[in-house]
Length: 235
Image (cartoon, rainbow, N blue to C red; front, side, top):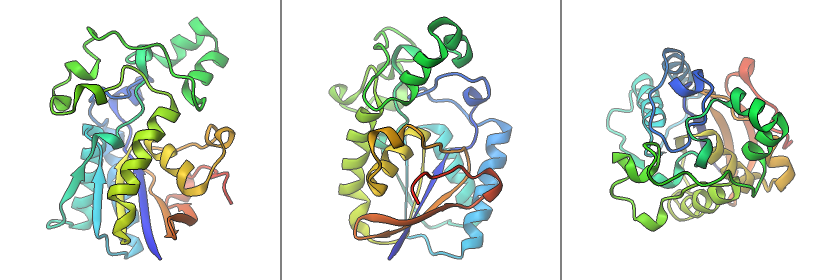
C-alpha cells in the first residue's frame, strides 16, 4: 500500500479578495505562506518517505510546495510541474468577485457555476489579460489544449488521465500540491464519487489530505489538520 498526500495551495491573494482565479497566476498571501509552512510540519510529523512530487504550473501551488519541501528538507528531491494539474478555468468569471456575482446572477446560479459537474461558465474572451494565451507561463502548451472555460467534468478529463499515466503507475509515496478543483476531480476518481456528491466535497487551503492507495483506489483518507478538516463525505 502506498500513500498519496494532496495539498491545496495556501491562501492566495485572490482567495483573500474572494475572486475567481482559475488559470491566472497569483501569489500566496501571508496567511497562505503560513498555511504552507504548517502543512509542511504536518507532513513532517507523519514520518513518511516521499518518493515523488508533482505540482501545477501556477505560482501559488509551486510556492506552497517549495515551503513544504523546505520544512521537510527535501533538498535533493525534484518535482514535476504539469499544467494538467492546474485549477479549473472559470471562463468569463475569471477575476470577478464572488459576492458581487452572487448579487448579479443570484447565489443559486453562482453555486451552480462553481459546483455543478458539467455546466461551465461562459467562455473568457481571448483578448482578456486573464486568458491563458496571454499569460507567459503557458507559452509552451499547445494552443488546442488551452481552455476558454471549464466545468468540473472538463477538469476531471485532464487531471485523471494525467494521474493514471504519470502518477498512479509509480506505486510509491506521492505528494501533490495543486488546487481545489483539480484535487476534487482526483478525489472523484479515487473514491468513485457520484456527480452529486463531488459537488459537496470541500478542499480547504493548506491542509494536507492523506490517502492510503491500494489497487488504484483510496482505501482511507484524513485531513492532517483536524481543526480545519472538512467532511470527506466518503466514509
